[in-house]
Length: 492
Image 1: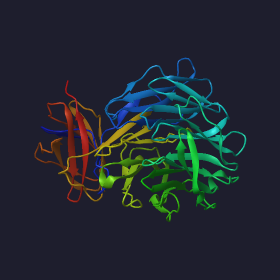
Image 2: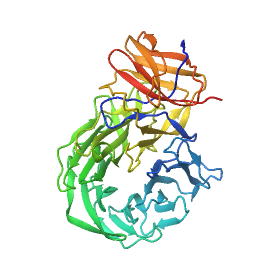
Image 3: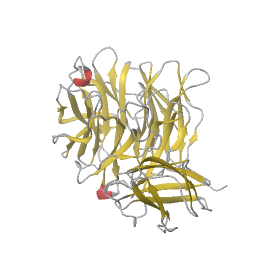
């Protein structure tokens, strides 16, 4: 390991890649040191309060969901108490949502029963009208909740509304008698939702046609079908489509889906007329020898051109050896509302690589609403000797630091936060690099530090001389492009 000394050095990183809607990403923040027992999820408010739901082991050998809370957009987290004790039945799915009244709910499926919990008041709800194999849920601006269930034992999909936070559920609304795997999204700009599902159900389920249905809230807890509201949105039955979901805002619907069996491509179709019609499919991420899967997507408001759509996913290079941060990555891409089909190239944000599991640890994305910087956060299960739960936050970088067009080298720094010494991993062709340090007021703090890099993956050990705790930016550049990382210095 090469050791470098400087009177100035900093930690944590953030790619400012591509000319895109994202500004910069911080360091991975550890939330839980336990490996989740099922899927993870989060939801939050525009004021920076975020809740993450993580199914974890319990000393009493019962199934539990730990709820972690942050009041600073995910920079720090605390475990709320007590956890949600779900009993002995395995948890197969959870979903955190924010209602239109700013209440935060944790919905979960255990033993075929869908439960809900207001994570702040502790109010518990239960839906047991039908046993369910799967579910999805959303909320209207008025706070009503809408639950879509995949009924156990047949191919029925049914919908229900609750005007009182999941305490009571209205009568059943029939969606399909030959459907499966409902996925729902409420528009960010109107009380109209889009529901996707497999239907009719193929014997080989992932090859089924995917349909779209639209409903509009006509009263508290009541949905009405939109005229011509049902249509087939993806009809290719020759290929697997293992995942699908929509995002709906300001008349745009982004319909995302994966295509393929092992080397999956992440694709999208866009409707610019509220779901009446869809344009041709296009690829967000793909390529031979790569598997793009496990995605989550959200709309965001404010910021660039009034808002847009962001998506995160797990990119797996299907390498023959052990995974690392260069082979397995959490990716993020985005587009603006005014150019809904033009997504930025995927940007790797994870310093702890995601892991494959039959439990399907899909990353969870949050878009903090009504912020000029439209900050985003991502939650995922990553490897750090053992599988743990991490979070990363995107935030605005100083405006006088221009963004580069592409990044052809990769960097990682650890530990972060740091006191005196940090390690830099640099993966690149043979080249000369220079390092500058910048404070959050955009002031350059040092003369450039030069590194001759012989090529490949090299480790450098750096001792910094920063005497004041705080956040800084570290710029690593060669003659063609640069990477900027956000670094946290903690002085004792």
